[in-house]
Image (cartoon, rainbow, N blue to C red):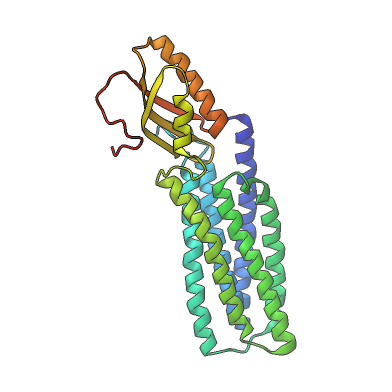
Amino acid sequence: MSHGHSNQHHTAGRNLLISILLNVAITAAQVVGGLISGSLALLSDALHNFSDVVSLIISYVANKLVGKDASLNKTFGYKRAEIIAAFVNSASLIVIAIILIFEAIERFREPQVIDSGIVIWLALLAIAGNGFSVLLLKQNSKSNMNLRSAYLHLLTDMMASVAVLIGGLLIKFYQVYWVDSVLTLAIAIYLIVVGWDLLKDSTKVLMLFTPSELPLEDIVKKICELPSVKNVHHIHVWQLNEDETHLEAHIDFEKDILLSQFDKILDDIEALVYKEFGINHVNIQPEFGKCDSKDLIVQD
């Protein structure tokens, strides 16, 4: 790992730890306040904050693991730890949202009087704490799926706290207690929306799907334009993590070339696919007159 990446991971790890401590304090305050005030929206926000704590701990552990060196029995090291963390965190967002929907429906049937004063002050506390955490993680979240999952947890919780604050004000001045359940439903639906996109992205990486922005036909066409290349087949393209995209393929050559000639062509292929498609790891099996399937995709 480069020195720059090490510094980024150290900074991200520190920011995650600060966010964990803030969310532990917010969650404890909201649970107590929600029970005293009778606010389901506040308790649902506390539940979401608790999920933030869990997700942030997962992200923090993954951030630490990814810096570990590879070994004989872990040749890729822990480079996928952050992808797994993103998958777990996004899935938890959706599960929590479903729980909140059931709770909101139940509260619609049996509305309860709510102490709006406690709700308002604790919502303000949560907005301040989560807002600070969002600012800490915002920059790193742009280039890291794991940190993006943690950032989304915090961002949605800050938005949920804003909704709880609005609900508390409406209850205080207009006594519309049903707004508590409506806001809970709105929070849940938003969690599902943001969680689903991240869940799909992390699943694609874990399942070794070809990145959607990489057209295999164009990659093959470009490689086949190189001198001596006859055919490209049995191709696999996948992401190991957000920093590494791998390509492996079998290449038929027009003639029986020397190994030194192949090395030169391999250099050209590596430069081509990196410049044109951002692929930074290439593994090529050279062939000449071999009787095997020449299909682009071959089931192993």
